[in-house]
Amino acid sequence: METDLTSVIIGLASLAIFLLPIGYYQLHEKKSLKEAKKKFLKKADDLAFQAGDLEVLRNRASIGIGKNHEELLYVNGNQFQLIELSDVVKCSNYKSHKKDLDSDDGVIQQIGIRIKLLKGLDVKLPIYEGKEGTMVGDENVITQRWISRINLAHKELEASVNA
Image 1 (cartoon, rainbow, N blue to C red):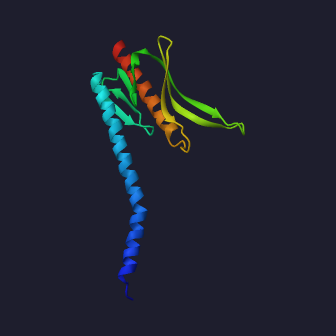
Image 2 (image 1 turned 30 degrees about the horizontal axis):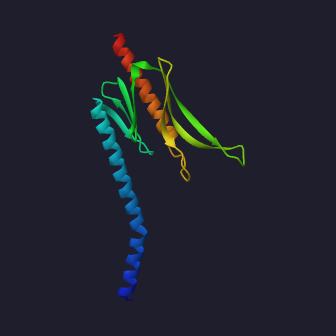
Image 3 (image 1 turned 45 degrees about the vertical axis):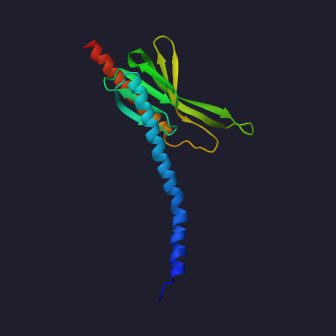
């Protein structure tokens, strides 16, 4: 059984056509994650924030708790929130829905962390921002994980102040 050169070339071209978009997507994702992390670290440096625990989210926002567990930094594009954990009263998740006109079901627009502060301020940090064609993945898990990290850092901060 002899394989001719034309069949081999067609097979390799087909394989390249299939794998090229996947490779491009992976490269693009890696580059955008790197840019988001770089933007977070630059903003942290500008604010003299020493990042300890840091995560780049699917919406290209970044969130991190300081090494000394006193502050939380959230960077999304050119906007940022620097929150003193000693000012946190309550931390919970939120979901905002957009009502569908055809049915009673709503489409999730945002999933995120709601932080209530001592001065009565209510800060929302979006983890997922729904756009046309995107689906909710593990954003609920990520939100709960960060809520528990914030609560733990807040308890550690209170324990160190009371000690």
